[in-house]
Length: 278
Ligand code: AMP
Ligand code: MN
Ligand code: MN
Ligand code: MN
Image 1: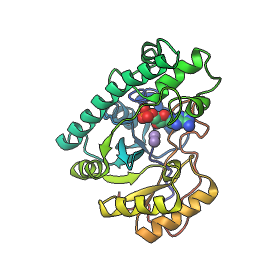
Image 2: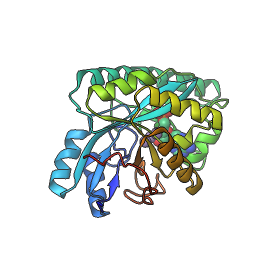
Image 3: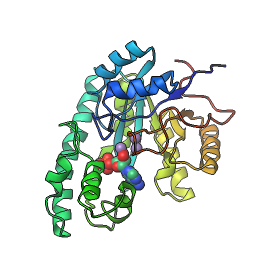
């Protein structure tokens, strides 16, 4: 049995993380991670820098991305792991998601202005470290700095979520398309943090069934978004549906993430790790 330490979910300044790809890789190596996936939201541009840094640090880099998907009116995240970053179908799909994302950011700015918060779009842009990707995280950093809330996590209770100021409807990629792009790029499609979607037991079974039928390969069983009970629960679902199991810290940077790179509990027994044949 392999004793390598895997972390298959992380973010850099090429999406909403705080560390550059090189800094992220160096931190992972220092923390004893052997295999790291960089999975920026809807973006592949950080991978070359991460790959070069990984070569230097003696760590294995897995090319990845976290795709934003709409499903039954909600948003899901699907990780593409070990994708070919040059695959045209994947690149085109991600470019389309990013274009929608930038229009959405302007609508978020307008919605916040309607709620009396001026200058949010320009404010969020000050926190954007990649010209190509703006996310709610950047609005959250602005709202904290401007004193509307104390901490980032409060933003996602009081703003930017359904029913709250700054929430806008948005349609991301279709789940089946996202899985197909990942497969076209030779990767594994893994449903990220399934415990985050606030689904009923029935809704969850429906999602997992559709993800499975659509060719989805695995689910992220171990995630800081999951309690110990949820980890056990998703392990059961993985066995039942025959999903591969993944594990990732979803690290966004010092001070933003309470779980550091590589700091996850082991996968529960009886699961097939997504890295089994790597
Ligand atoms: P977006 O893709 O623009 O909708 O932004 C989603 C990002 O917001 C996620 O990837 C997280 O980084 C961040 N986020 C969402 N919910 C929370 C939360 N409750 N606390 C902290 N960050 C969150
Ligand atoms: Mn994020
Ligand atoms: Mn996510
Ligand atoms: Mn993530």
